Amino acid sequence: MRIDPDRLWQRLMRLAEIGGRPDGGVDRQALTEGEIAAWRLLIGWAAEVGMEAATDAAGNLFLTLQGRDRALPPLLAGSHIDSQPTGGKFDGAFGVLAALEAATFLAERGVAPARDITIVAWMNEEGSRFAPGMMGSEAFAGVRDLAAIRAARDAEGISAGDALDTLHAAFPELPCRPLGFPVGYYLEPHIEQGPLLEQAGIPIGIVTGIQGKTTWEIVIKGEEGHAGTLDMAMRRDALVAFARMAAAMQAEVGLADPVVKFTIGRVEVRPNAPSVVPSRVLFRIDLRHPDNAALAGFGRRLEALAETYAAPCGVSVTRLGEAPSNDFDAGLRARIAAAAARLGHAVMPILSAAGHDARHMAPLCPAAMIFIPCRGGISHAPQEWAEPAHVAAGAAVLAEVISELA
Image 1 (tube, rainbow, N blue to C red):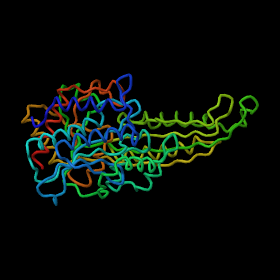
Image 2: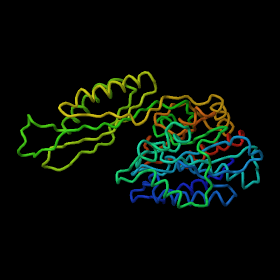
Image 3: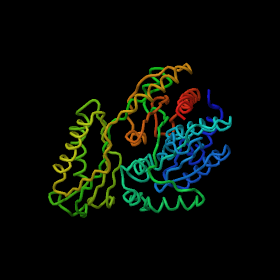
Image 4: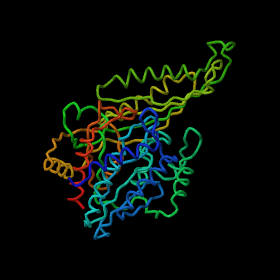
């Protein structure tokens, strides 16, 4: 294998200590002090073998093993290191550290690749602190304007722009690369975040593509009133309107298709007082489907239901993000299969039900993803787990493909 599996595992466990939770999970959200500390750790590991560190205006981290011809567009590999508030040790982190291990192994043996090998940790993939997620890769790919990203605010009212400025101020020595520089290839290893590989007893998933996703923010505007004196017929109760709306959406969209994924994952009620009629409800919808036409149709139905069930309250519907389904490069998928075969690992094709930064890289260059199993398919939770043997297998396959391409 072109990796050191013990070092990779130890680094995964060390990184998980930053933002570590008492229950074994990880809370290392985007652009926090925890992520700054994680950057320092990654930059230090890369510096040990002479890799260059850099960033860009969107707060992405790049660690580069120099190639012989620096005019060639680099091979980019990695994922993200931010987590959910109750996240696990492997989501995102496995991809970054597996790619770093592949580059480190080459550097230690004095191998100068033909082109740069650049490890990336994308900013705010999770979207848990600032919504929507995948801000770093979206900015890099030109999918979302940087000004709009900087304007986003977290639950404490801190803007992503201010948090980005704090991050960059912590690393004044880092060069700032152009946003969206040319890329030759993109590879992203990741835990599956589903049960299929484990159920099949297969260590390597070759990702065929990512199902489409649309997100909304919906605000229902009612009117405050005294819970003891305001007649029921006179009320403009935003929470009651939300309850009607959510039930209709679940029935007409969430249960309409066995493949659709419909989630209301965030709800804010104001004034959120026990004796006051709620005047405002803000909630966010996550809708996913592998068929783009079906995704669009269900999206239109959600918007119509919001308008229908809001009365007597007002409602505003804002699309936060749209990401259609995509396919990954057939040539890279074949290379992954061949590399796994040489290493003696069984593979299976698999569609990613979760979104990943690779979605935004696929239109820019040949791109692909490598999945490894996770126990019970559990992710975004403290009990998220990947077996050391599977971590090593996924990283070894990645290293084989990187060595070929670079």
